[in-house]
Length: 308
Ligand code: BDR
Ligand code: CA
Image (cartoon, rainbow, N blue to C red):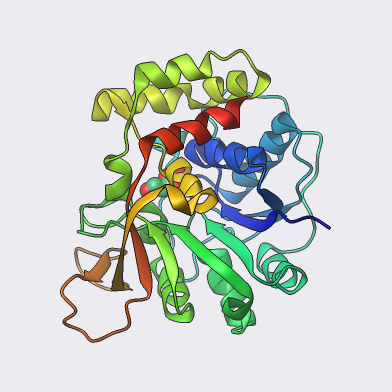
């Protein structure tokens, strides 16, 4: 028996996903049950391979379940221009020795929720796998103790279009299904990520720690850090790392805002945007607990622990 919190992570690695996963593996208070993998940052073959490689580097004996290769309804563009064609900075790393599981990610989610009722579910990519699992088993939310989603841009300042954030913009229909199905969920949105930037020089110093994890992460993140410095200046934004810190240590939050939220699935200009009812006009239930801030010292603690 273990008193660690059972943690299931849905992810599309992805450079910032990778740091978040290393954080979860390093947590003394959590037991990572598995990684369910979606397409998103790059195609599914790459995201699965990256997850396997990362587990190998971290010596994490965690099963990897391949999931959906495309969004539920409409095709979407990936983010290879940020993460590299292979999603891990095109370093040409040696192929992982480990193999992925045969079970589909959506089925693994359902099975693991029965085996570990009350689990913590953290979603770091498009919500395609979770939406599919919810269609297969609508009772799934009753066995999830806490759902945390990295996604959305709560005042409409997106990163994949003018108004949409990447994860929800990639598969808005899936996000709609998830937001409808859960009575409550935590949201770490892109605009909050922008307010928790990490100085490039500090990140570079952490990545020079000399450990195998730091060396690997330094290599796979080099291109995206350079791209970010060129585009966004002196701060780097590790969206999934911030989300994972809030998942692992909710006490590190400096505030939450409870609001009703919708995902735009149509629209000429705003497909994939999150529409937050800030003033309570709709009368809809305030299901989303939107993170308002996270203690930077705790974020840095988790980021550094991950590399040790
Ligand atoms: C999200 O989009 C992806 O590119 C990142 O991995 C992160 O999950 C940020 O908008
Ligand atoms: Ca991600």
